[in-house]
Image 1 (spheres, rainbow, N blue to C red):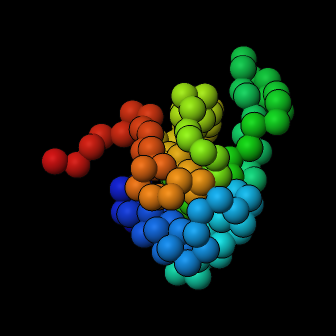
Image 2 (image 1 turned 60 degrees about the horizontal axis):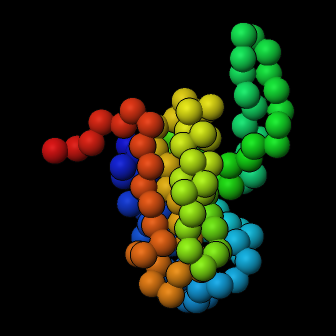
Image 3 (image 1 turned 180 degrees about the vertical axis):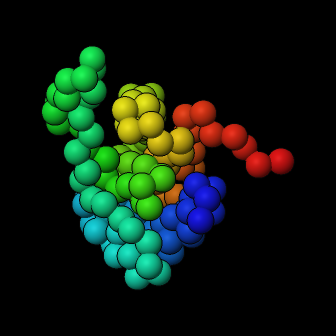
Length: 129
């Protein structure tokens, strides 16, 4: 499955979860349930995956963690806040660069309308025509 195909599955489940559970719960609730749904269809999902900084052959563990990494291709960062801030997008872009992955999603389950709380972030990803 490509990054874009995985992204569609991730978002489909995010919308289902938001519809069923509603907005505003702690982000861990959405993380657990989304990971469950993705695993239920046979996808590999890592939760709270540590992301080290690699510099000149040295590895520094500075506490960066991806909420979810799906199939070692897509990073999913979940929030449950009133509004996304620029720093949230920067967090995902940093994770993408440090892991050398190409696609990430920032999903804010705090929004009444989930579609208003989704940001797709790319790190050198070629868009389909």
